[in-house]
Every structure is written in structure tokens, then in C-alpha cells.
Image (cartoon, rainbow over all chains, first blue to last red; front, side, top):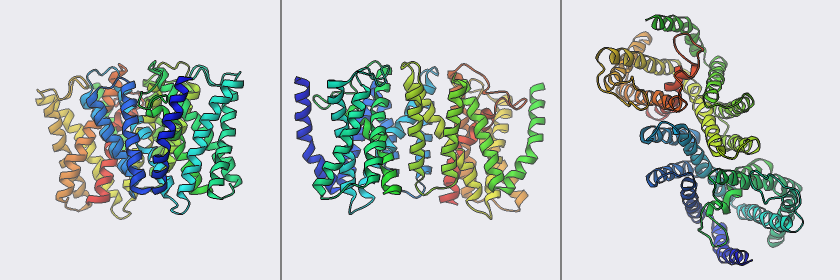
Length: 265
Length: 265
């Protein structure tokens, strides 16, 4: 339980500044996400055994993709393609052994998207609607975080059926369903704070769909870690493991949440 | 020399329909590029040892990314991100052994970009300017093809210094320079056909920069092949190897050529 207490204390210390940054949005949020991108990227390449110089170059490429999306350049995909071409050429001209070169190129391509493009949507979904952006991002994060917490406790108390043993042996179907319930509670809790009533579309799409993508995002990162035989992506936050462990659900679900705000709200 | 003659005959048979398609543009070019994407994708996954079902799913994902870019959906990067999320989840839920899962995910991410997004720019650069689009794409392809041919003959006759032995042991620096000269000749030849005078920016940017990216695209594909210890990506076109072998230079340089047409012309 010592680990759990450390986890709660860490969360409580980080929560107020994070909420403040979400409230302010713009350059504050932009900086926070940039920081998260950098920290996650360090862990992402370290766990794959990339060297220091490779990681630095990769992170610069991630930030290139990130800024392209954040600033909504009209030909976004063109500029991201340029970043990716340079990623490929970087591997081509620095790889020491051609055996494994395609793996390194693929991992770098995935990195640019996973840790450059996807996190940009966190920023975009705060900024898309200046009136309700804070409400939306707060609802979104509460859904993901309460889903995680509820999944943990439901799984621990009544979890019996394994969810996906090969990838994450401790997760259970019961925990996952508890997570969906936690997400719905999160949506209602935030609506209460903001004096709003959550719409049916929000309960269904954010509470169930976005939540499920978040849970799958967690599994996706577990898959990468397990491939490399490691438990935590890093040890940045006491009790929470690495930064990537903390935001894995957000990274994969942020574009799906943006989809909701952009087209379904 | 038998192989070389087969190569010339194949090229001569394919050239008229390809030129016709380039001239017509729109749905004709769209279909041709789609076909090339599918054929290249089959080779791309076959050479990495992916199974039949995996390759089919991957190709569907490639086409999803391709169509997103071709139809210029306003939130391009969002839709491509959605395709990529499904790529990641596909690997997550089908991978048989977690060892190598990150490699498979990375290779699929790279595939979606390399064979979904990049080829879309071939279509876009024909369609960007309805008056001169045909002239531009013709100039571009002539540059790439004459570069390849000149590099081959220059290298064969006076090549002495290896260009990048680990990746492509037969290529020489002399051949590469011959390729640059070939590109310039290609630009002038096409300008002659169209009754135009090539601009300085075209000679420099297309003749040198785009040409160089094409040559690097060729090396990039050689790197992938060599990693898997194979010589040709396929045997579709007699004397030419696989389709991917034929278009490797175009795939990596198409976004760079689009950059030129969009911003520098």
C-alpha cells in the first residue's frame, strides 16, 4: 500500500497546476504538452534501446510534427510527411547495421506519430472552442483518470476474468467494465462542477467510446513495454512509473476525443 | 545484357499508357496510383514476413490514409491519426507473441505513411495546377527516371568510389553525380516537348534537390530489402524487379516535389 499512498500524494501535488494550465489553455497548455512529449519520447526510445544521439534527433522530429499540427498549417500532412522523410533518411544515414534497420525506421515513424502528432490533439481539443474548451478537456481527462482508478479498484476487488493476459496479466474484464462506469461518473462529476447536464452523446461517445480507446491505449503501451521486457517506462513520478505510463491512455484517445468535439457535439 | 533488354521492352510497353494517364489526371491517375499502392504494399509486407491477413488489413489502412490525403479532407491529420490508431490496435489485438510487437506496430505505422500518405502527393502534384499540372508531373518523373538511367550507365562506365556500400554495394558517387546530370537533361527534354524554358528554380530544386531525395528514396528501400536479405521487392515487371523497386525514388521524393510546386514555383 506504500506505493499507492505515494501515487495519491504525487497526484494531489500535480493536480492544481495541471488544472490551472488546462484553464488558461494557449501557450501554457502548449508548453505543458511539449514537456510531456519530450519526457515520453525519452522513455519511448530508452525502452527500445536507442542511444542518446538517436533519441535527441528523434525528439526534435517529434516536436516538428507536433508544432505542425498545433499551428494548424494549411498543408499539415505535407509538413508531417517532410518530417517523416527526414526520419527515414536519418535512419538510412546513421544505422550501423542494416540488420534491424527497418525496425529502427518503423519505430521512429511510429514515434513521430505516437509522440508528435497524437499529443497535439490534446492541445487542439482545449483550443477548438474557446467558450467550452476547458469544460471539454476537463471532462475528457476526468473520464480517462476516473476510468483508470475505477478499473484498478474494481479489478482488485471483484476481478476474475482476465482481459488480455499476454499483454497485461493483471487487468480483468470486471476492471475494464468498472473503468467504463468510472468514466460516466467522471462526466457527471465535471458537469456538476460546471453546472451543466451531460448530453446523451457525451455519455455514450466520451463515456464509452473514448474511454474504451483510452483503455486500449493503455494496453498498447503495455504491449510495447512487454516487448522490451520492462515494467515501467520510467520512474519520473513517484508511485506512477514513467510519464508515458501516465499518459498512454490519453495519447491514443486524444484524436478520438477531438473527433467528438469537432463533428459530434 | 538479356536482363537489360527485358527492362527496356517492359518500359516501352508501359510508357504510353502511363503518359496517357498522367495527361488525363483525375480519376485515371487516382486509380493508377491506387493500383501502385496496392502492389507496393503487397511487396512491402511480404518482404517483412507478414502473413496474408495482416497484409490485407494493412493495405486497407494504407488506402484509408491515401484517400484522406487525396480528397484533401480539411482535418487530414485527424483522419490519418484515426487510421493509425486502428493500425496500432490491429497489432495489439492480433499479435501472437508480444516479442516483436513493437516492431510490427512500427512497420505498420511506417507502411501507412510510406505507402499511404506519400504516394498521395503524386496525385496531388498533378492536380494542384490544372493548366501546368501535366507539365510538372512529367518533368518530375522524367527527372527521376533519367536520373536512374544516367546513374546506372555513369556508374557502370566510370564508377570508382562507393556511395554507401553497406546499403547498396553497386552504387557509386560517380553514378550519383551522373544521375544529377540526367535529371537536368530530363528537365530540358520535357521543356523542349512542351515548348517551355525551365526556370532556374526548377533546375536547382527539381534537378538537384528532388533528384537527390529520389536517390535517397532508392537507398531507403534498399536498406529495407537488405535488412530482410532479399534482392528484389518482387518480380512483377520483367527486368525491373518489383513495383516497389520501380517507384522507391518517387515515393520518398513526391512530397518534396509537391513542396516545390506549392511554395517555390
